[in-house]
Image 1 (cartoon, helix red, strand yellow):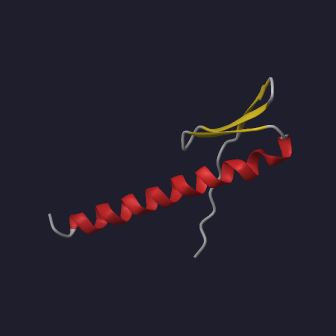
Image 2 (cartoon, rainbow, N blue to C red):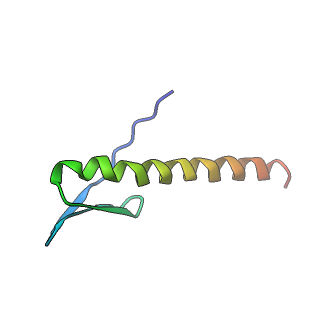
Length: 66
């Protein structure tokens, strides 16, 4: 089952490109081209979501023994 998430993409123009920030997950990326911001932000976003799932699984596993 695929879950759909909606996140905010805060974009700031810098001297040499853009900074794209997702406040809900506290992650950011820097790109030179506007059209690449979501492509580049997707990698840390996926990592953050997978780590949250791992922590959730570990916490559920540990609760079985407490």
